[in-house]
Length: 171
View: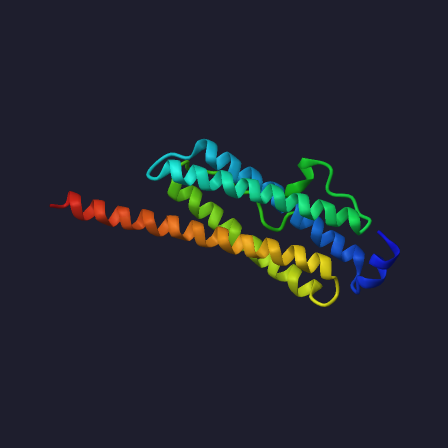
């Protein structure tokens, strides 16, 4: 970490690196959860949901890249072994029990809500203390909030379709 960078970070850098390593691990797990979900998804609106999952996977990978860069800037090393990601992560990877799009959407919605909490916490931790980490965390938080809304919209669409089908079939 550069000399000036050390002076402007006004919080415990080791603690911050630990939190960033947890978030980094979570982003890799989120990437994998979306990527795999896009491969195995079945059911109503599959094509649109697969497209959305692939877009979210790419954004999660971008988040991991931003976090890795920041960890390195702060003098740390990103988690090097994928086998360590689950142990580091507070937001866990949810292996799908059911490949139905509704189940996958709910699993990813739970994960997004955990990520929102993670980045809200990182923003609170770094606000006024570490401007660059705050900026990165705020940017990721914005995207995680968008992911939650997009997933909620798909869940609502599926529920509307289910109700329509029940009414249509009961005639």
